[in-house]
Length: 320
Image (cartoon, rainbow, N blue to C red):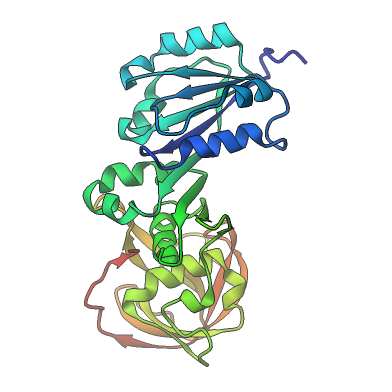
């Protein structure tokens, strides 16, 4: 089949991040990786010039060419058409400056045979908290959309669990990797990092830890299989739930006041279903199982008992 037939789509690999977040290093590793590069004509569109450069030898070996743009205004439909005609690339890698705005890039029309294959958000762990404090909306744009989030420059002082919770709240389906300064990498999750005692006969989930428990149970359902929990929340009714079930959960704010929604798990009950307006303390057994409301493996709660209680001091769940 001709590579420019109607069926063929030229994949775009979008690598985002702020200046010196490690984008160039990642792309160089991609080009040097025999598992990724097999001689395809690769166009690398560089949207900012950092300290690292692309060596001529690497570009020749990887059959890659570089096009540099100095401002977002250069990323026009005409530009994309011209480089497509000039190089006839078999794939495109865009090293994108997140300061320019991801949605702005998406709005620019591109050749019809180009298609986004993967988006990676690079984050410098040493500046993450500062950027989240001072540039929150800009900082969260890429993680919300990325398939993969990579924190680099991590060491023993990096708050991996906290950072992971933050980005998973923004984008629960993304993969998260922490690249350490010693050359190793990990996913940043461990039972010992959780703020509640996983070895307790009944695991007590505090009001402020509800978000941590929810995200960790979604990511590692088998970790909770067979455990018993005691946790505060509300019962919600949804259409097409299995018989004798409700959704136990709370409302959460992921990024800002415009991003508030319900989070929770299916709960089976045997007696009377709690009133939807009531806050309850639920004691439940946990089963790791397929969750129809999530469309994936998660956990199912088996109600042991519940007691009507007062609402928590803070009704919304926050993830950081």
